[in-house]
Image (cartoon, rainbow, N blue to C red; front, side):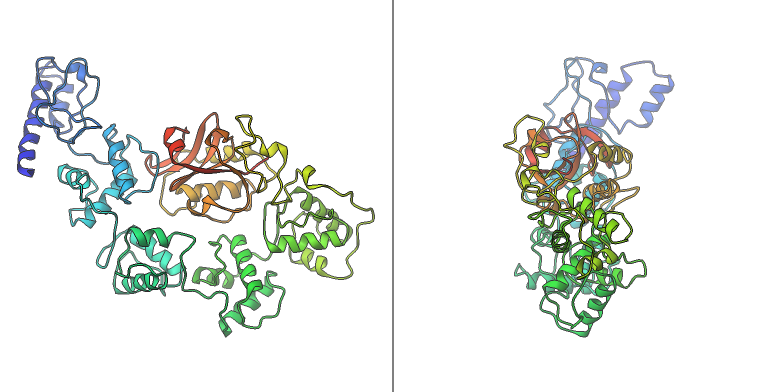
Length: 532
């Protein structure tokens, strides 16, 4: 079959060369340039004689269609290159990217006509799996294998090498299955770590990372091999003391990893840009040991048991109305904290650091001189309640509140500011796993932009954005408005208004501003209202 197709390919190139030869003067620089690149057939159909049958490739056809397919003067399509490679731009690239995404070699995204670095890297992964030359070019053999009925789903195993394996090793390290960070070489230690992870999570044990293992590896349901609740050791005691010194833990360091220790670990992770999982993993321990570890602090937009504890003390001393101890740090809580700090001779910054928390937990703090009017949840527009929402944040661009959930809370700030920050990074390269400031993947981009806009958001994968447990849910695609975080299957972006979105796009290879097209609608899961 390949031999026949190679013969057809020769006819295909010859036909294109003959057409070029008949379409203009033979001795112009343009003609000479065309002859030098005759293997790249990008011929406008208007330049082709009606009487010359030329084989073409369409987005819905084969890469090398049957000989009966011919162009006519009425066609306006452009012939695709024989070899698709980095820098090419053609409708057929969309079909290629869709196939790579379906098989797990490329991050899910809206397909484009551009063949960039991410597409080339995805082709290399496919070629590696099938033991082909890893040139990142989609030629005839690669295309045929990719679109065959038995094309394999993404899988890596012992002996494979690549940056994607380094990412897998890093995840295994974070989950406690690898002792050291990986080097991109899938060796015996990585295979053993994968087997241990598969066994602990009750999935098929083969030591390879395929569809099932990849899905679990990056999910919230994965069981780690880390120090967590129920552990008892001197190592736990050591890090409990560190959490006490940093102000996160207010109990004795007894070596028993209980619920209070887990909450303290989570708050430390959120404040120190770690993945928030509540485990004493290697990255968390390194961050705790660092001299630059950020001490305890609660700020606008935070949601935790410590926020609830601070709110209870603010209510006790008369600075916050009864019933507003919901665990979400909104504008009313910030105002109450400032008033408490002012009355108690503390730095007035509206955040609860170690000194402010210590004062709140003491028995001799000064009460508010004047009683605080009771504020009902229905009029609480500051976002203190995680179960109530204001009418302004519940409204949608479509004029209906039915598609905007009543749960969650919005954050003080400006959607326009967030969009401006996102726009400032247009054109920055897409790099898998990158969180900025000059390169991003989709979730890293949202994480960076929100934190630059003053929203204290810990890092979440695109899967984690399905339920961040904090913001107001927007369940209808038509209710999306500027500043919302839009979550689709395997991807996330920031709505920019006017039916557009700004996101770090793997298919475009960079941060782009584009339409919220039918692809986004068809893959839509949920959106989150960040600002009221």
